[in-house]
Amino acid sequence: MTQSSTTRLTVAQALVRFLAAQYTERDGERQRLIGATWGIFGHGNVAGLGQALIEYADAMPYHQGRNEQSMVHAAVGYARQSNRLSTHAVTTSIGPGATNLVTGAALATVNHLPVLLLPGDVFATRPADPVLQQLEVPYAGDVSVNDTLRPVSRYFDRITRPEALIPSALQAMRVLTDPVETGAVTLALPQDVQAEAYDWPEEFFAERVWTVRRPGADPTELAEAVGAVRAAKRPLVLAGGGVHHSRAEEVLAEFAEATRIPVASTQAGKGSLRHDHPQDVGGVGHTGTATADELARTADLVIGVGTRYTDFTTASGTLFENPDVRFLNLNIAPFDGHKLAGLPLIADARSGLGELTEALVMHGHRAADSYVTEYTEDKERWEQRVDACFEADEPDVRPTQPQVIGALDALVDESDIIINAAGSLPGDLHKLWRTRSRDQYHLEYGYSCMGYEIPAAIGVKLAAPERNVWALVGDGTYLMMPTEIVTAVQEGIAIKMLLVQNHGYASIGGLSESVGGERFGTAYRFTSDDGTFTGAPLPVDLAANAASLGMRVLRAKTVRDLRAALAEARAADTATCVYVETETSDTVSGAPPAQAWWDVPVAETATRSSAVKARELYERHVSTRRRHL
Image 1 (spheres, rainbow, N blue to C red):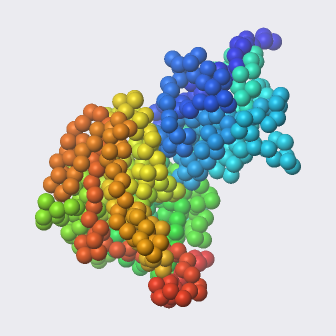
Image 2: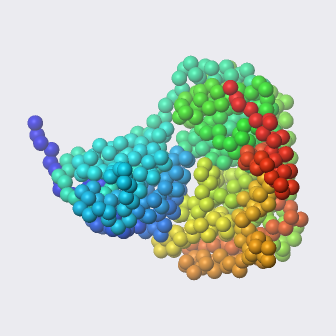
Image 3: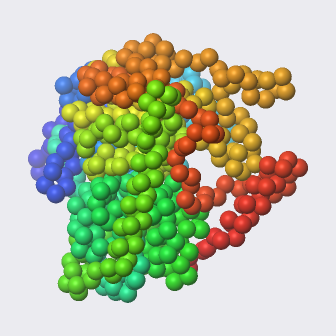
């Protein structure tokens, strides 16, 4: 037997070489799995992965981050825009650098988006104990702060010996490329092990192609699904993020056109059909359209495609009111396919939809004319409400938030991508935005993480450099994480930022008022004589802050200014911010109110009248909740 040749490298060097040789393939499309590595260096990784990235700079591109959490967000944005076929790695030092990864890791895992985390760890050999930034746990000598990443990772390992990297790295790649299991993957790397040399078999560095599966449906489950659809009088499709992950948009359109079944979308699934497709009825759930939510209330069959059925989608279990409603769940993950006691159709979204369409067409199944007329007319009425929200009769006044959205909506084409995650914008966008392409609408609402938008826009722009990428950011989110503006400026990444100033946490303020919290602690204002934060707005100039970080800033005071600034920003070839302060007066028309309920528990006992009234309303809503069995 011929002994395989070896190469002597450090663990960090071997890992970088290994990652550079990993590829994915789906439908004949091959991509590099780890497109680049983000890093902030400290004593836990500077001499290991830091040195290795210099050693193999030609094989592994590097991006310099400013915040560990935001580096993960950038990697996640890149992964989503790359259809989960490619992602980035993120390396940090030990201690605070590593724990700053936790929020980003949770976001990635909740949204089923792959990202590889490579935090430094304390010495495996323990020459000095404790070292700088080490957490001492008296009852367990093998615990470090990196263990906080275990519950938010889909795969976790600590590499305490060089040779342990080989099986662990292969398992990490398996999870990253598994459409069911994917999420955050963590390989914790003790700083001494990173720098330790080992004789690596050359086979470890050979190119590997990981095939991303498209499993079809089980024949028995498919037959049951066909029977359920054919028996339904008022079926409704709920398109979730799995439609996008599978690139099933065209097949969904074929299904909808063949059957005339209306399609509503979750936040993650919006854009599965273009806004002007005859069967598209808009967002569903608490932030959905009146059209979609009324169809959901009366549906006798809900066909969930790639959805997790979160509480926003189901209106906390109150939306699907038809006493005879059943659920058919087409999902690649059995865990989600069995939710709401539904009929499972466990398959890749594109494969499963194709098989379901073929079977229904063979039977000549189509929704009734009366049903089509009903949802078509309802959709037209909703579009008129959207037009009214966007309309600005007086162009020389401060815009409302819906008018801000409308100004952008009127400017973009199908090549533009909008990114948002938190605040009051997600609700308005889900109800009002008119999506023109399958990947135009990029809402991270699985974790709804403030601070996601700017770094995610960088990641998306890296994956789609030829397209205009807009980060829609409220003042609360901006203050959480503006730091990656510096990265965009440094690397010439021409993202566009629409920064909306409304002086506080407007979304939570409205929620607080509705549940008896009286907007406590949600406004950015000075304290009044009574100690409450009800004084004048703070003199915070976020536009000046963005400019100080190197971004070009265009200030818009009126609707007219806003339209001009957005057009100028869209044409810009440098990172550009449009800053606008919105009208928040109670007398000014905003977006349509929520069309369905969302459960936020209200104080069961209270002396303040606002909480007492909110509890009465809460009890009326919660009494309508159903457990679908």
